[in-house]
Image (cartoon, rainbow, N blue to C red; front, side):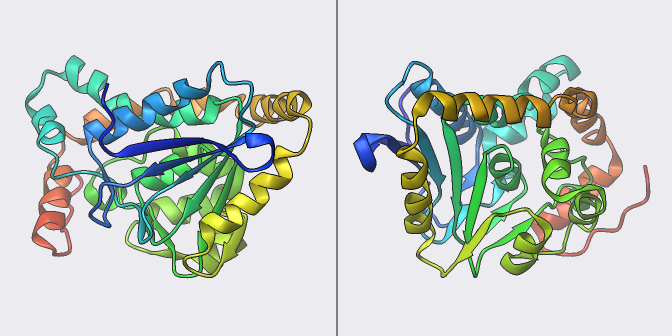
Length: 269
C-alpha cells in the first residue's frame, strides 16, 4: 500500500539504531482518517525483522500530533450505513493500529507538539514513552460525542495515570489536559520547549540506542507483559460498545453538535 501520510526514516543516531516515523497530512490538524490509520497500523511491520533498529520515534507535524478520529472522512462516515457486523469489523482498525504499536519490539517514543486529541491520545499511550512541548495539550472527547473511549486505551491510561485521573480525563471530555498536568498525572514523561520535542526525544533515544539491543528488547517485553496482562478484560468489548453507542440519540446529538460547533444536549437515550 502506498503511504500518503506517513514517512519512515531509518539509520539515525548511534550505530544507525534510531528510526523516526512522521505522521503529517500537511494541514496542521492530522486527523485519523481510515487511510491514515491503515498506514499507521502497517508501519510496525517495517520493524518486525529489523534487528538493527533499537528505538522508534513517532511524531506528527510541527504544530499538531493528531486531532483524533476524522469525523469528516467520507470513508469513516459511510460506516454508519453498514450492517452491525461490518461496523464492528470497521471499528477494529483503530484498536489494531494501537496494538501494533504497543507490540513493536523496539522501544518507542511519542514526540508530541500541539494538540493530541482522542484517537491521537489513544495512539501515544500505546507507546513506551511520551515527550511533549510546553504548549501541547491532550483531550479525550469521545464521551462528549456520545460514544465510549475505545481502542484499548483505558487500560493503558489506567497504567499510566491511575483510576481517578483516567476517569477525569475520559468523563470530563471537554477539558484540555495541558503539558504541566500531563506530566503531573503521568501521561507524559518529559515536557520541553515547543519546537524542541523531537530533539529531546532523539537525545533520549540515543541513550537507549547505545545499550545492548538484546536485553533492551527482553526488558521491554517483560515489562509490557506484566503491565498489560489484564488489558483484554477491559478492552475486549471496545468495538461492540462503540457500535452500540453509535446507535444512540446521544451519539447523533454529540456529533451534530461538534459539526455545528455548539454544546450538545444529551437525553440518555
